[in-house]
Image (tube, rainbow, N blue to C red; front, top):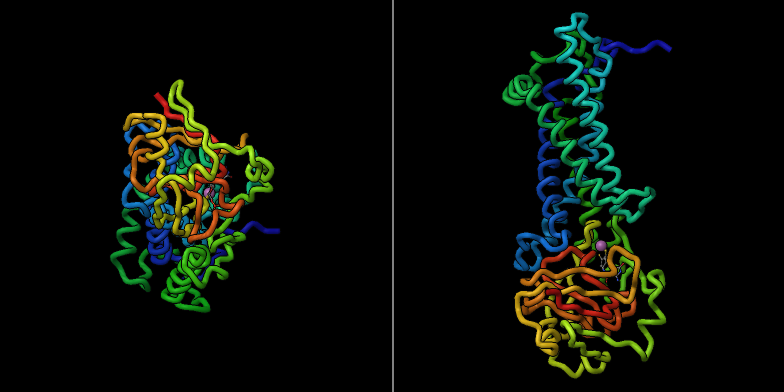
Length: 381
Ligand SMILES: Nc1nc2c(c(=O)[nH]1)N[C@H]1C(S)=C(S)[C@@H](COP(=O)(O)O)O[C@H]1N2
Ligand SMILES: [Mo]
């Protein structure tokens, strides 16, 4: 088979004018994903030097929703962008070393950009689909690679800036930056390609976001979960191996502060003052749903063991050996008057799959830190 050359590609759709525009949208998606991704990563750091605010209670739901929406929208944009610039892959290298060196560096940065982008978008997508066919930590890898991708992106933008500026200020059908033989009309116009890019990006984001809109949840092909009380179940009690312990009459919630320990049955908790708050579960995997949670204020439990305000609090689950088996609440979350040990959801007894006998629900936290099947609360010093 003959290897094609750059000149083998003759469509006038594969032009700088199209590449620069799709690239700009892609860049915006990457920027949104980077900023919201850093927020999400930091939100999951234990013992944060500067704790994130607990208000507004739905801020994390918004930033993480934007993160996954930007990532899914970027998938069709990246595919279209790669199609548009594909001929460049066959560009010959300059013969002279002085010219070949910068070209090699530039192409190297593009190779890194393309490969890390593909890895980021696929691992992100598989994460939304809750499928982890790899052995590494998704969160740390996704976080570290983001900076490699952004570094390569900045180099790419810097190198291309003159062309990009020219292409973006000129008309979409302008040919001044085209390869000489890229003259063949395509099946659609250049505007048509942009419209296709825009609609497919919006459709991809919708396929994911639909899961967060009541009524159209069934369309959320990318993030469907089984549900109880209308709220998705991320891990069932059975798969967490907690059914026996969670339904046992020997169940107690232990509240520990130094040498002081109080053991409470679920009935003891029900006898305390009950509060209700509407708070979302905002999963890092992208879906989020709010419910009306009823239960005991964490601060009321801390008062039972005379815990002072301003302390970090560790919350442990019956479930062990899982990323969600314990979490640390910063002081502003532990003392917040919406942070509950929930006993009810939407007026009904909390179901086993949502964390019966009791689960943590705090405002503005990643779902992964809303510990289910809570058995122990420790005041840290
Ligand atoms: N003990 C325990 N708590 C857990 C989990 C878990 O696997 N085990 N999953 C977490 C995740 S990732 C999310 S998004 C929420 C989901 O809560 P839900 O299943 O009630 O919707 O619970 C969190 N709490
Ligand atoms: Mo989650």
